[in-house]
Image (tube, rainbow, N blue to C red; front, side, top):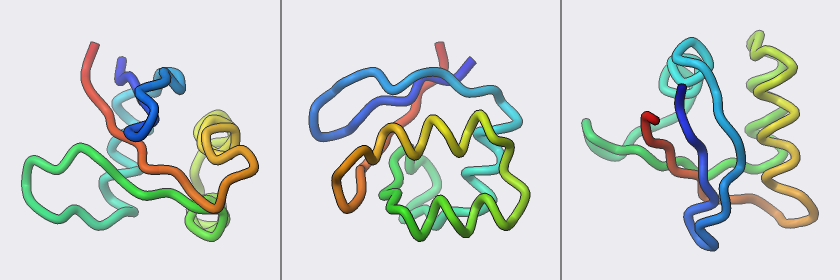
Length: 78
């Protein structure tokens, strides 16, 4: 499993599967090879939903954003 955290607050956001992580990696831009963080906003979530992301991942990311403009998430294997 993969743990997601809010990079700014350190709050745990939940866990995702290896397949869901691979979807994020495929969809989002990495600044360097070992990059483990992403900025997510509502537009990003909408694009991922249109690209076939599963509903569990979409719900987790939407909840992570909450009422903010976006959120910086980071992941680690657990």
